[in-house]
Image (cartoon, rainbow, N blue to C red; front, side, top):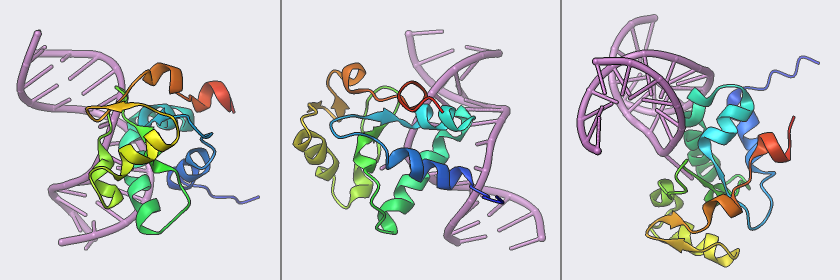
Length: 112
DNA sequence: TGATTGACCAACT
DNA sequence: CAGTTGGCCAATC
């Protein structure tokens, strides 16, 4: 009832549901929400999630190529990579190794 | 209050 | 093949 959830809120819901040792992409979340064009909002929401100290594993969210673009926003240029490697995800040159294998698609996994 | 930006993606030229 | 533009929503200037 009258649950006015903005894209912004939905991003938090999906991002917080990313399983351990998995990664997803901004476009995947945006597409899951209904608009792949909102991919920019996803990244922006992640940034706010960190600023607001939300418990959002934003380090599990990378771009479509598996490239870690927003690592600088974690308070350190290597923080994000360390977090991913800490979860068993290999990272090389700001890119996730075997990204497709670690890829977690909300449309496929959540499918809601 | 209007205009610009933002951790992107895909299509078009 | 590479560069540019459009699109989406919300926040910031």
